Image (tube, rainbow, N blue to C red):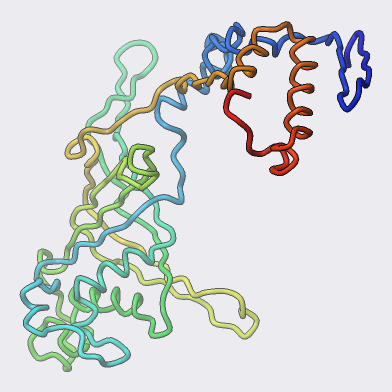
Amino acid sequence: MAILRGGRRIGNYDIRVGIPRDRSLDNVNADERLRRKPGGNPESTINRFIAEINKGEGLARPTRYLVYINLPSPIALTNSQVSAGMGFDDASPPSKRDLEMPDQVRNVGMMCNKITMPARDINTVAHQTYGPRREMPYAYSYSGEIECTFYTDKYNTQRNFWENWQSKISDIGLVHSGFEGSGNTSHHMNYYDNYIGNVYIYQLGSFDNEQDRDRITYAVRLNEVYPETIGSYDLGYADTDTFINIPIKLRYRTWENLTIQDVEGVEFGKPFGDAPTIKAGKDFGLFGGLLSKLPPEVRRAGRDILQTSKRNLPIGRVTGGRVFPPFL
């Protein structure tokens, strides 16, 4: 609302003059508020907290991860074996050799819809000479178990993958299970080194300089891994809108933090964003430049007269005011 406003019609022109209450937008480029850093006062408690989160480019999300499985060497097919024709034979469901192909191993890792990060414990023992006792560390240990679940296709390929791996641990009578005399169950146990593999768990995050593509931000490797338990699942006529999840419990001996040991060049964000660039308004033509030098009250009246002239002069009538000589 203006403090004072008035107008008069002179011929075909409406001339209006007013004194506005708010003059904060008269000179936007000189506004002191644009010199402040975005994000408010960096010394306030909430902004310090936001700044610390921004240093790490946001919080980690549990939905962004990738699992990679490295089969034991006696089980996994090499690229040369795949090129030689060992593997997929166009038969459905997949054969046992299909389950050991690199593409199938990658498929199982992608089908992992839930997995638990490993833990590490420091074992302590009570020590007391005088006064309160101390818990003194004497060793470190691992829980040795990882629970995960997998989607599966209609052939139960992902479950067959883990059953095939388990058949390399003990002779349970499966054909080509890796034991001599396959087909005749001996219940013999295989050598430990013949059935242990590795599992990599990658935590991912998006990077602005990579067009928001995911990159590894944290990674662990489970060593000496084998499938200890293949869990059961229920079937029922009432479960029409659900999918089967295969529960798997993996046994491992140790794990390593690959982020500290192998991954380098991790980029961190800034505590505050860059200041926005405010572009100055353009002065169109000779009269446009003159109008910008006038007081705001007169500038609005002059702009109205100029726009009316554009519409009413012959060329303005033809073009609707959209095309006009550049000096106006």
